[in-house]
Image 1 (tube, rainbow, N blue to C red):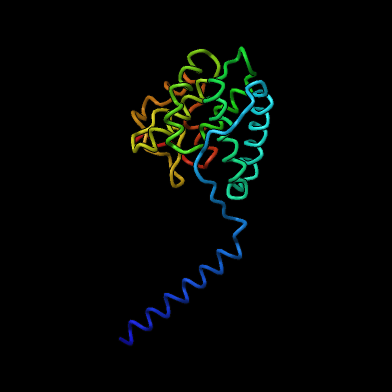
Image 2: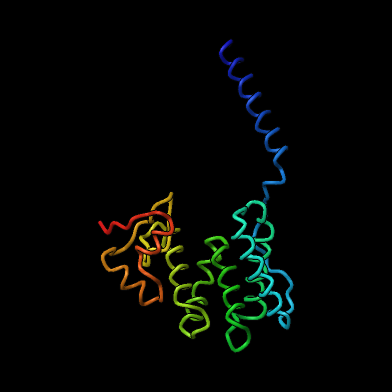
Length: 196
């Protein structure tokens, strides 16, 4: 009985400390909720995508994803809403920067939406509206999320190259996608490539 009271007292103190910490740091945490389809004006998709592009670059450069979680979430909603309400854009309608904004929104959303819209990304690459490298990055991320080996060696996990299918031929696959060698890519993260 005495041990239970001590344990209960420690637990209450612990919960109190965590509560105080969360309250004091509440601005650093953001629940952004689900990605919803929102109203977008299809005639203004160029302007919207320009804003998404600039916003995404600013968020990634700042390296403070928690601070910008709501803005990042909004970008994802805008991109998905444009696709749903206006259709997947092409280079006949928008610029390469705008197409990259579409890709960024999808690449940075959750796996459910990335997988759902991946066929559109694949088709856009086939049509020349998106870069092959963008396809490779998204394909590797989807494979990693499914627990499968990646193909192009673009994804890292826990500071290491995530498992890779046929590592001995990865540079051939990367070259076909317009990507540099795996060795050069990994050197940016101070990781040495070991095909074994």
